[in-house]
Length: 87
Image 1 (spheres, rainbow, N blue to C red):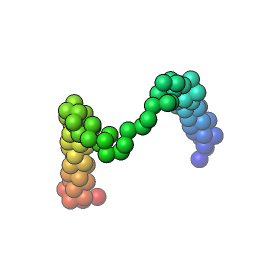
Image 2: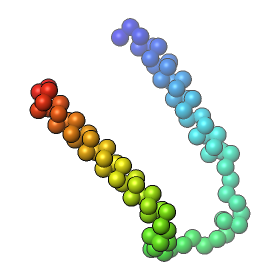
Image 3: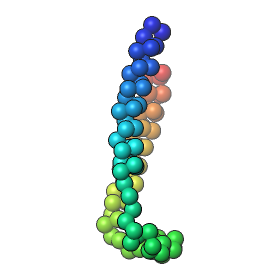
Image 4: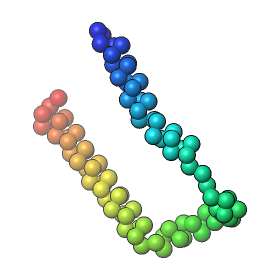
């Protein structure tokens, strides 16, 4: 293509602009010393704590139902394109 070098340049610029804040955050973040010495909770104890957290469960159900709606919409759109539009 005639604009291949421009597309590559734009991709590199946007790639660097996208990764720069992530790298700055990673380099500039330190863990507190009191948390380094803390013992990590067991896996199933963490799951029980998450299951007892009602706002967390509510938000996870909302997240799940939102993506179920998106998936249903995509399946319906695919059906419409294949059988109604016949493409």
